[in-house]
Image 1 (cartoon, rainbow, N blue to C red):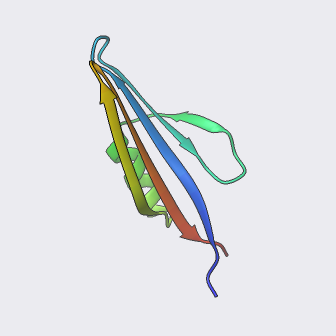
Image 2 (image 1 turned 120 degrees about the vertical axis):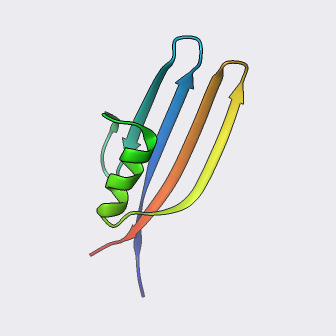
Length: 75
């Protein structure tokens, strides 16, 4: 039976300041800010064996938020 570990990627965008931040939370780690945009962070995680399993987006006014959940088999 396969067991899985899970991670999340959080992107918050502020249209007023045109600043975006991408953070990653890996199993057993802290939420850490990442260099690059959402696509480059997700592509890097994909190359490390992570698979996208869920996505949520919301926003109000000029502020937006996205969260991606990923999984990969444990070794």
